[in-house]
Image (tube, rainbow over all chains, first blue to last red; front, side, top):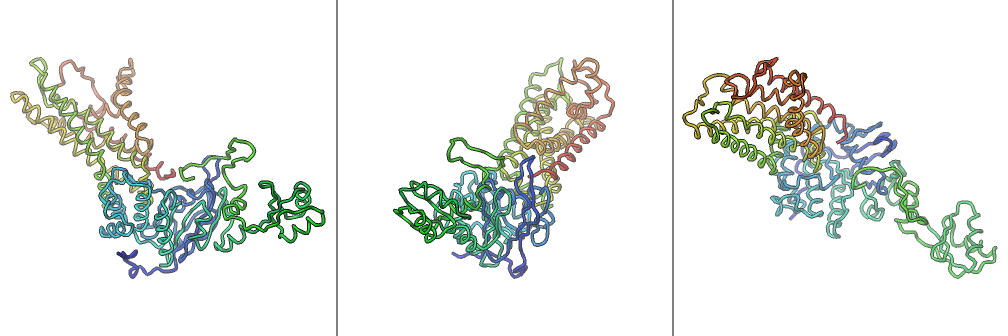
Length: 335
Length: 249
């Protein structure tokens, strides 16, 4: 059964305007800087991925957008207004930040009922969104007994309640089964196709590569890039060359001496970045080094993402030592 | 009005307020029955004695009121609330209003039920509500419950944790005030200015003091006592609203 996502498009007819604009957004918790001078815009009509490693400040930014946390400096505008100045905000912007923000003894319907009432939305809208996310049959059950997937669907129902032009989802596929993940990806694409602004965070580039048209990438609270997903992936993944040689050390020294090149040892082979396989072969020839393998590699997205956000990762697991080197802490189970 | 409806839906769609209301009624009426049942000629039942147990009910109501807001922090629904209604002052005022109103109604039910128990168990005792003071002894319970609920919501919002808020409220009301009143020389002077003492002064002042109770002269009349208790609760609420508006949710 197809349920309309929207119930008052004709009334508002606000197409193409709704966007999120962060301007020099900064948030400090005590001495920890969670987000630093972050500026970006999120446009309607497409899915914008908000990408960054755990602890990069994604959830904090989302809380700042929703006016839950107060920025230390800078601000965020929704449709040109501050969140706190929105009247009936659920009609403008729907969000799923944490699927567990539900009283466990309250039924799914009661949860949506008070939300609807608070923004002057009709009661039938509650049943519509329950139908939409497929929770009609369990609407009277206590939300505390829901599986993660069901909680996530309830959170999405709450986000869609006011038929908003802007939607925020914080790590919506976390902990979902493949079917749930597929459902959420389709939903986000559908919402964007209807001309809405969809802003979705993830720490997985591979996930974003499948859904997002545009990416806002942050690391350690700072903006690393804002570009289309295609561009970012292109730039991020780059190429590397795998070389195997019995004179490993000699070749490594020679290659490492070239500007713009990084070399690392991986399972008895060298991985060279910043050079084509032709160039590597030429260097080997001038050094008189015997090659057993010379193959261009297309780096994995995750590897590339890690390289880009490199020192922007909050928690470094040091390869040599076994201890974890922690830099700063930031709250929230998500982070 | 919308926000009052929202808070009403939230409050009554969970179980704890129902349990607290039942507990307040059961505890108070149970103790009243005990007091009335064990009273004799040397300890006659009066309108006031039927209300002695209301303090137990008040403690349960304090817990209920604090829970109404601390559970919102515990389960994160306060964030969902502030997201739906960014005007935090309005949210907190509405919540306080709904909880206080409910506490007031429970207080009246508890008070008249206790009085009724007295009448049924001791038909011969003089329990008629003849004077304004008699009415205050009984109907005043609802007012004290309502104001107490305001204070508990304020403390709950400030502390944000159920255990902390409940401990603070109960230890203060049951222990600290008693100990401070018992301090030599100064105890008697500060006693009237301890909020929960003022509340019980409001309910019990005037009328015939129970045997054995020392009559302490108070710096205020009964309504002054209530005004003071209300002032403390209102101040607490104002502080809470200011803090909640500044704080990250």
